[in-house]
Image 1 (cartoon, rainbow, N blue to C red):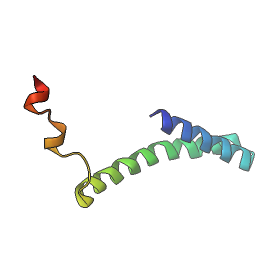
Image 2 (cartoon, rainbow, N blue to C red):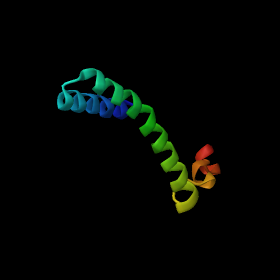
Image 3 (tube, helix red, strand yellow):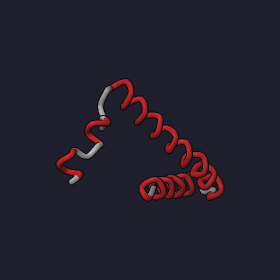
Image 4 (cartoon, helix red, strand yellow):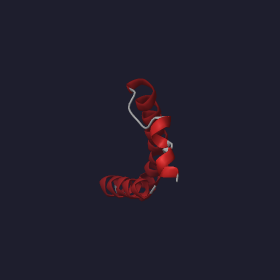
Length: 68
């Protein structure tokens, strides 16, 4: 979440400086923040489901030796 805030702030500054309109920068940041979070979530779901990489249920559960 902190990375997303930093990245969005960077986008706002770049757009604000590039256009000279800080309201445009804030508007782009307001759209960019949730859009990139949604895209990241969808990317991870596709990666896990179709590529087959990720943590399996067996890997995420502690073994009996670890549980003791």
